[in-house]
Image: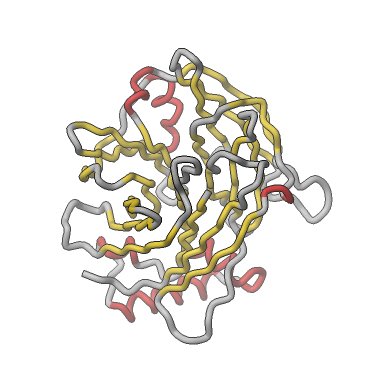
Length: 315
C-alpha cells in the first residue's frame, strides 16, 4: 500500500576534508520551552581520534510553488567553518542525546574491549547573536558500561517519543528494543534490558526509530534505499515508504547515513520563523490528514504528520 505524505528530504553531505575523517553523528536539539526552532548537533572525530562537536540552525529549503507530496533538497556541509568544541574523549564509537536534561552520552572502548561512557552536560545550545557560539560541555559522570551491552547495537534516541532504541541479533533475526530515555544510565550501568517491539530479517540494517517509525536501509553497489514503516504493530498491511539515493562509499571510504526527523510545530518554526503560529500549524496538519483520509486514532497517523523533514546526513 502506498501512502501519499508531505515529506521534505534534506540530504546533508559532509565535505571530504581532513577535519572530520570519521562518520558524524546527528542529534536533534529541541528547545524545552518550545519557543525557539530546533537545532542540529553534529558529533564527529578528528584523525587523531579526538571527539569534536558543534551545533547549528536547521534551515528549511524553499519549497516549489507547485503541489507535490515530497521534495528533495541537498546542501554541502563544510566542517572547517564551524566553531568546534574539542572534547577530552577519543575514539568515540557512538553517542546518545537526552534532550530532557541536555545530556550527551559518549561511548568508546579500550584495548581490552571494555566499553566506557562519558556523560556530558551541554550548554549554550541556543546562543544569542552576540557572544560565543561554541557549544559548552561539563563532565558529570564517567564509568565502565555493563557487559550485557556488548550484544546491543544501533543505539538511537527519539526525542518525540522520549525513548531510546537498540537492536540485538540472533539466528538471522534482528530485534528492536525500546527503553524510556530516563533509563539510559540504568541500561549502561546495570545492564537493564528494554522491551521488545519488533523483529525483522537481518538483510536490512537498522537505522533507528523516530516518531514511531522504523527506519532501515539496504546497500547495493552505489545505491542506498531507506525503508520507513510504522512500529504500531507487525502487520505488513500498514503503509510503508522508501527513498533511495546514490553514494560513493567503498572499503576505503565507508559511510553510514544518520537520520533525524523534524515534525509538526518544530518544522513550522523552522519553515515560518518568527511568523510561526501554533494554532495555524495544528490546523494545517489536521486539514491535510482529513484530505488524505487519515484518522487521529489510526496507526497510520504515525505517517500522518503533514509537516515532516527527514534529514539524512551522508558522511
